[in-house]
Image (cartoon, rainbow, N blue to C red; front, side, top):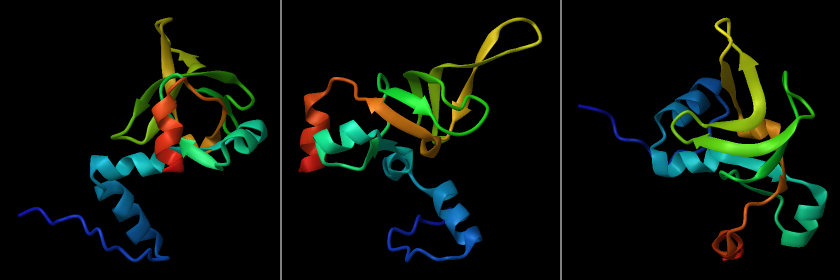
Length: 124
């Protein structure tokens, strides 16, 4: 019998328990792991520090091999908690290009995709 996911988890400081929580989280809670910081002007405009990354958002990559590159979010993988950004690609040995998965914590949202419901839900 598969063990149930514990909703009443009390944020342990033990890394193994933090990893276990993220690995076993159901999809409806994994969206919380897809948050990224907003740029300064967006922060002032919206009154919010961070939002969930969505397809169509313009982002700047802050860490890693593609640091300082800007691009649009092409795809968000909720299951693996990764984001695919246009421009963050590697050339494979056979010459084809492959998009590199990026952790959303390494992104800075510079422009939001047009969705009026998004901010209405956040301001609640």
